[in-house]
Length: 636
Image 1 (cartoon, one colour):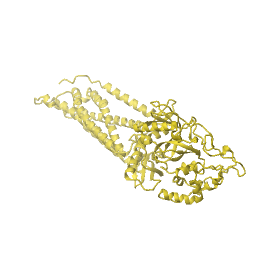
Image 2 (cartoon, rainbow, N blue to C red):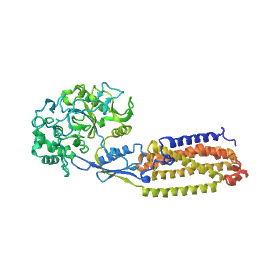
Image 3 (cartoon, one colour):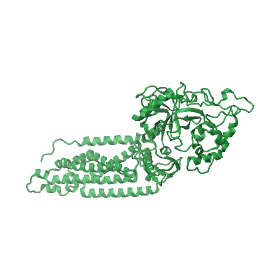
Image 4 (cartoon, rainbow, N blue to C red):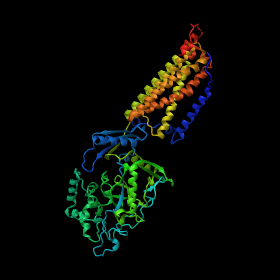
């Protein structure tokens, strides 16, 4: 029987395999690696192997205090899991606990997980008015006549005009992809400075803030606040139609002083006009309000920028749900920005909002809130904070960017929050603790011991049954292990893949698939020799027939791993990923090492010896007379 056409050149396949090893381990030692040799060769281990950080988030509701629905809690869990496990293989554990808690566990101690629990509710609101947010009332000397410049009434040069952000502050700009006009940072204007004789202690917050439990409803909370500040203070604050002019009525300073003693939780239940008009309510209180205090897009709200400027903001007319995608990118100046792509409806809302701000429709924006060119500003509000408040310099019809002094980490975190959506529930971090891996380490030692014993038994059996062919099995397993190990190290650095006990189990299971391919190939080789072919001609023919079976078996295993990865979560996903990775690398070893090395062995004298080669009775049977038969029927 003539051998198949085409001459096998095993050196080429082995050279390709050597090239893969060189590239892989160059990445292991030099790509994103630092420290000692041990550090460079250490894969990223999971929570159950090295311990990690566990954070408990408690769902809060500043309105009624009721726990969230089961549907909202599960939706929040899925969004948080997407944020901390964006690549799907970082082995983060995100589970619900009770009816209001979510527990996050992530490999590595002292991990910063504060951002993953933020609601990330994005609102674009016009700035209607601006005032001083220091919380210190400026009171003139008793005998002095208030100077005109000391007036706190709103005006272009009034002292109530806050200091806007400098040019280095984040701002929203039109992206190069479309739109006309642009958005510029607010121009510097007069800063409200208290009179030289003003007494900062007149309205400074004191430690007497209420520590009593917050009542369940807004009405009850407001009544509690009214009782705390007193009827006179409450009546004076309710009668304010603009930020209080303490120079015109110095007695207001004493009346409004109790509002400086309120806690952020108590300030949050006050009406927006009261929060803005009472000068003793400062940014120190407003910035620490509970989550979701200003989340209602249908209400006017009060928020601060940079901790000094207090703004009265219009309704949120463009929301985070109007943003279809967000990415952290480098702009033309090599600064990190967050690029925003709006949905179809969102683009229309954004264009309408910028038109309102550019034309100051209805003169809604007070003179204190206008920018350098006399145009309205639009505040980019994320949760309770103002990211930026740029002046609108034209009607924007394209996508936009949030720019500023972002680092890559900050821009990526913000983009991820906006991309995966806002949480339907607001959370407060209750505790953060480091967890050890004592139990996981003992399991790891037991698992590695069991895997070592199992592999040793496989090798012993291989040498006993296949003799020289057993060395092929041994070398193939060693090469597969080295490829898998290098891939684990590189993937841990590039996509955050973490190795857990489940992943180790997936790799051990893949050894069974590799062993099956050996048996298929070697037994097919014996069949070819029994049919009367020489060992040299039997090797390529056995490979051609066994190859289809080997590919089919590995394809089924790989398909099972893909399906399991798609439908599973947590550690099961890591098991599926490890199983699929080991299966793919086993195919690489099969094609680039096992078949070429068998071709080389077939050219040696030892391969012709039954005692050495492991072909057993197949070689003697080749020389015995056989009954006539039809080879083509056998092949079929």
